[in-house]
Amino acid sequence: MELKIRHGFLLLFILLLGACQKLEFTPISDWKQLNDFPGEARASATSFAYQDKAYICLGRSGWKVDFLKDLWEYDSQTDQWTRKTDFPGAARVKAIGAVIGDKAYVGLGAIAPYTGPIYNDLWEYDLKNDTWKQVASFPGKASNDLFSAVIDDCIYTTEGYTSTQFKPDTYKYDPKTNEWTRLKDCPVKRTGTAGFAIGKNLYVGTGYDGDNKLKDFWEYNPTTNVWTQKDNFLGGARYKAVGFSLNNYGYIGTGYGDDSVDKIDFYRFDPTAASGSQWLKVQSIGGSKRRGATAFTFSGKAYVCTGINNGVSLTDMWEYDPTADTWTKKTDLDDDDDWTIIRQNASSFVLDNKAYVFLGENSSTLSDVWQYDFANDTWVEMSGFEGSSRTNAAAFAVGDKAIVATGQTGSYYLDDVWEWRPYEESDEDD
Image (cartoon, rainbow, N blue to C red; front, side, top):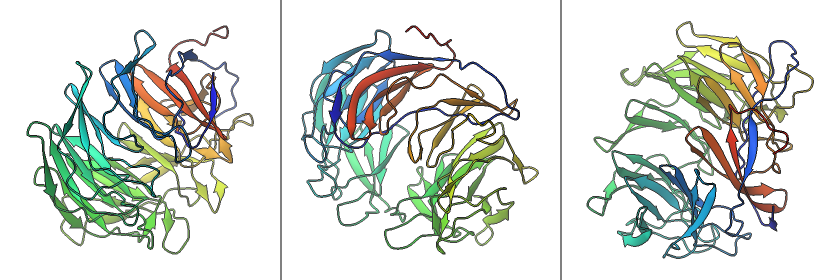
């Protein structure tokens, strides 16, 4: 495994917390090292997936220097990397990437955000023929850190940063006509937002605009291309809150408030209610106030765990039942003295009736892997990640496995690639 000094990467781990009783168990599942990424070790790359292949391109191999434009294809069936035709635009970082049909779209981004050039070009990559062609450039002011999403085979972009200010511009790119359409400006230009999706509409609000914590809340309807302001978030201005949706309602809670105090309260949003009555205070989460928590949903209930309160990492996990409006304490994250799974700013997902909590930090980067069983309220340790602990790795899912590539550990940048299959027995000899 080759180590190269550089900066910042995106770690993928999967964590699962402590059981109701102290149990003796043998870790299951297998981490298997795959072929190293053959390109130059990098950070801030763009990635996308198509069928059983994944692609990594662009990025940088140094701190604000050595920007890259090569494109690599990973075949998950053969564990082989193939260099494809280089990106024909300028080398850059933080470009957007999206796949529509058998075409990928890569563009925008910047050099050394936020002091170098920022780009507005967009390129179409033919995944079957390995060819690039430039399509219509982004018509707005060149921006970095845009939000983008694919809805009905069109790419939507909004927000973004121009090196001096946040931008509210919202655009739609239609590959069938090769046209950008200026949409109604997004009223939300901020970071640290919370939100959720209900039906085909998106809802975003709260956050921080560089000067103030915010409490306004907005609905975006892709069908009508309309942003509609909804009632202000009832809990007041804050950022680093969590949001989720259950049974056609949205929920936002916790976070860091305008009074510089971590929060414990939760509120329910009803998209069908009349103005002035869209938010309703519900039961506050049990335990401590918190920010930087993570939330996931399963079988009509929501789960919130991790985070910090006044700089202290939290160990509790709570299940929310929207029908009864009650929070039930689940197994603590430190229920066993041997468990060290506490962290903040984690990510989470649910797969095959199990939850996985991953990423995050607790004084340093982490590499343990845990799985939560909803039926038994138990956390089971999976085989630990066998590579170096890391942050900012490129991570993607292909079929029933996860792929983790590159990343950073301390001051080193990595170019190794790992495959994780959660249901295979661990092989200590591989």
